Image 1 (cartoon, rainbow, N blue to C red):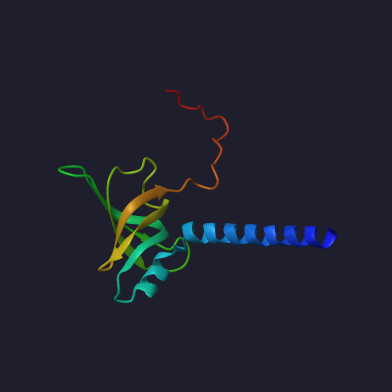
Image 2 (spheres, rainbow, N blue to C red; image 1 turned 45 degrees about the vertical axis):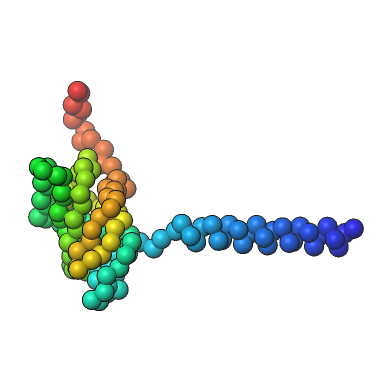
Length: 137
Protein backbone atom coordinates (compact mmCIF):
# COMPACT_ATOMS: atom_id res chain seq x y z
CA UNK A 1 0.00 0.00 0.00
CA UNK A 2 2.88 2.42 0.63
CA UNK A 3 4.13 2.45 -2.99
CA UNK A 4 0.62 2.72 -4.42
CA UNK A 5 -0.30 5.58 -2.06
CA UNK A 6 2.90 7.53 -2.87
CA UNK A 7 2.34 6.96 -6.60
CA UNK A 8 -1.25 8.27 -6.38
CA UNK A 9 -0.20 11.34 -4.37
CA UNK A 10 2.59 12.08 -6.87
CA UNK A 11 0.18 11.70 -9.80
CA UNK A 12 -2.35 14.09 -8.19
CA UNK A 13 0.37 16.67 -7.48
CA UNK A 14 1.63 16.53 -11.08
CA UNK A 15 -1.88 16.75 -12.53
CA UNK A 16 -2.75 19.63 -10.17
CA UNK A 17 0.40 21.55 -11.13
CA UNK A 18 -0.34 21.02 -14.83
CA UNK A 19 -3.90 22.31 -14.42
CA UNK A 20 -2.72 25.43 -12.54
CA UNK A 21 -0.04 26.10 -15.17
CA UNK A 22 -2.52 25.68 -18.05
CA UNK A 23 -5.12 27.93 -16.39
CA UNK A 24 -2.71 30.79 -15.66
CA UNK A 25 -0.95 30.84 -19.04
CA UNK A 26 -4.25 31.36 -20.83
CA UNK A 27 -5.20 34.45 -18.82
CA UNK A 28 -1.86 36.15 -18.24
CA UNK A 29 -0.44 38.71 -20.62
CA UNK A 30 2.87 40.46 -20.98
CA UNK A 31 2.96 44.21 -20.30
CA UNK A 32 5.05 46.03 -22.89
CA UNK A 33 6.71 49.41 -22.55
CA UNK A 34 6.06 51.86 -25.43
CA UNK A 35 9.61 51.42 -26.81
CA UNK A 36 9.13 47.60 -26.78
CA UNK A 37 5.81 47.99 -28.57
CA UNK A 38 7.41 50.07 -31.33
CA UNK A 39 10.21 47.51 -31.71
CA UNK A 40 7.84 44.52 -31.84
CA UNK A 41 5.37 46.17 -34.20
CA UNK A 42 7.80 47.10 -37.03
CA UNK A 43 5.22 47.68 -39.77
CA UNK A 44 2.72 45.07 -38.62
CA UNK A 45 -0.39 45.43 -36.53
CA UNK A 46 -0.46 43.80 -33.10
CA UNK A 47 -3.86 42.63 -31.93
CA UNK A 48 -4.58 42.80 -28.19
CA UNK A 49 -1.54 44.15 -26.43
CA UNK A 50 -1.09 45.47 -22.91
CA UNK A 51 1.10 48.54 -22.57
CA UNK A 52 2.31 50.31 -19.46
CA UNK A 53 3.63 53.84 -19.81
CA UNK A 54 3.66 57.42 -18.59
CA UNK A 55 1.24 59.99 -20.03
CA UNK A 56 2.86 62.95 -21.80
CA UNK A 57 1.39 66.25 -23.04
CA UNK A 58 -0.53 67.20 -25.11
CA UNK A 59 -3.78 65.61 -23.95
CA UNK A 60 -7.02 66.12 -25.89
CA UNK A 61 -10.41 65.17 -24.43
CA UNK A 62 -13.46 65.55 -26.63
CA UNK A 63 -16.87 65.04 -25.00
CA UNK A 64 -19.25 65.84 -27.87
CA UNK A 65 -20.65 64.05 -29.88
CA UNK A 66 -18.73 61.13 -28.31
CA UNK A 67 -16.07 60.94 -25.61
CA UNK A 68 -12.63 60.55 -27.16
CA UNK A 69 -9.37 60.87 -25.22
CA UNK A 70 -6.17 61.34 -27.24
CA UNK A 71 -2.73 61.34 -25.65
CA UNK A 72 0.70 59.72 -25.91
CA UNK A 73 2.68 57.48 -23.58
CA UNK A 74 6.41 56.95 -23.11
CA UNK A 75 8.56 54.62 -21.04
CA UNK A 76 8.52 55.63 -17.35
CA UNK A 77 12.30 55.36 -17.31
CA UNK A 78 14.60 55.38 -20.28
CA UNK A 79 13.45 55.86 -23.85
CA UNK A 80 11.74 59.08 -24.91
CA UNK A 81 9.88 57.36 -27.78
CA UNK A 82 6.16 57.97 -27.58
CA UNK A 83 3.15 55.99 -28.77
CA UNK A 84 -0.09 57.81 -29.61
CA UNK A 85 -3.20 56.46 -27.86
CA UNK A 86 -6.90 56.89 -28.68
CA UNK A 87 -9.44 55.88 -26.04
CA UNK A 88 -13.19 56.16 -26.56
CA UNK A 89 -14.80 56.41 -23.17
CA UNK A 90 -14.91 58.27 -19.89
CA UNK A 91 -11.58 59.75 -18.78
CA UNK A 92 -10.37 58.11 -15.53
CA UNK A 93 -10.47 60.38 -12.46
CA UNK A 94 -6.74 60.48 -11.78
CA UNK A 95 -5.72 60.79 -15.45
CA UNK A 96 -3.12 63.51 -16.06
CA UNK A 97 0.25 64.11 -17.70
CA UNK A 98 3.01 62.42 -15.75
CA UNK A 99 0.69 59.68 -14.43
CA UNK A 100 1.45 56.02 -15.17
CA UNK A 101 -1.27 54.13 -17.05
CA UNK A 102 -2.02 50.57 -18.10
CA UNK A 103 -3.66 50.19 -21.51
CA UNK A 104 -5.26 47.15 -23.15
CA UNK A 105 -5.94 47.53 -26.85
CA UNK A 106 -4.92 47.00 -30.45
CA UNK A 107 -1.85 48.56 -32.06
CA UNK A 108 -3.01 49.54 -35.55
CA UNK A 109 -1.23 51.81 -38.03
CA UNK A 110 1.13 53.16 -35.36
CA UNK A 111 -1.65 54.10 -32.91
CA UNK A 112 -2.72 52.22 -29.81
CA UNK A 113 -6.53 51.91 -29.89
CA UNK A 114 -7.34 51.46 -26.21
CA UNK A 115 -10.23 49.21 -25.21
CA UNK A 116 -9.41 49.57 -21.51
CA UNK A 117 -7.53 52.35 -19.70
CA UNK A 118 -6.45 52.32 -16.05
CA UNK A 119 -4.47 54.92 -14.16
CA UNK A 120 -2.05 53.57 -11.61
CA UNK A 121 -2.00 55.02 -8.13
CA UNK A 122 1.27 56.55 -7.00
CA UNK A 123 3.33 54.02 -5.08
CA UNK A 124 4.15 56.59 -2.43
CA UNK A 125 1.91 59.30 -1.03
CA UNK A 126 3.55 62.43 0.35
CA UNK A 127 2.52 63.38 3.88
CA UNK A 128 1.04 66.84 4.46
CA UNK A 129 3.50 69.56 5.37
CA UNK A 130 3.81 70.20 9.12
CA UNK A 131 1.28 72.77 10.23
CA UNK A 132 -0.83 72.41 7.08
CA UNK A 133 -4.57 72.20 7.62
CA UNK A 134 -6.37 69.55 5.65
CA UNK A 135 -9.20 70.87 3.49
CA UNK A 136 -12.58 69.49 4.47
CA UNK A 137 -15.49 69.09 2.12
